[in-house]
Image 1 (cartoon, rainbow, N blue to C red):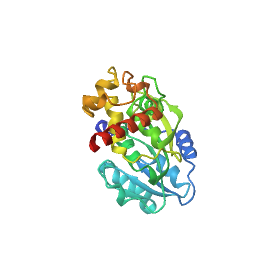
Image 2 (cartoon, rainbow, N blue to C red):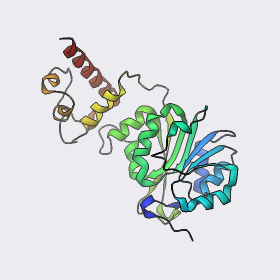
Image 3 (cartoon, helix red, strand yellow):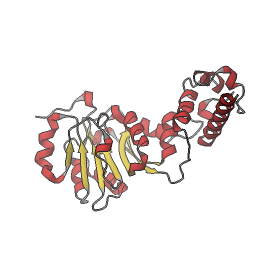
Length: 262
């Protein structure tokens, strides 16, 4: 008898209406390439296969392998690896991939950061995650949930909060609400020549939410250079929009370039 593992964040969805709703939002077409993360006992897997997609499932729990293999046989490509440790480049097909998954809570943020790093490989991402995290991803500038995760996901994707899912629709029921979100790669994503620097600036700006930019950016820029930035450094990271951070990034680049040329 299979028992859910708390350490793996296993909460299996048991409502087929919710499953159908998720797949409908994903708009899976025949011959689409789809990744499912943590198929569990296969309730979502089965609905995805009803749409004749080319399905790859990543599963870490070896106790589930025989259950999945017996149920779906050669209809899926089962990858017996931790999705966070897998080499994604090995599994990307020539076509873009859809991700459709009931994601284990504890891998949500690192998984989404990996998705963002490979945004150009995906056509759409529809996932069920903890509602609190979904709210952070979809947060607007100036709100308490707004932060690095909000900026990063909204930089690479158009984010939509689809609907909330209550705990009683899972086994075992989680202690919090879940939510389904969809991510569609942005066609108007800003072009930046040094994305590493851009994200370092953003991460530094949120290092201590109570502190002003002047204090937070000291871990990244010397006090001497900070004084040369043509930017209001009395602001806090949570008050800056994507456009504001782009302007700050350009200021930092300008100051760095000037310093190097002196």
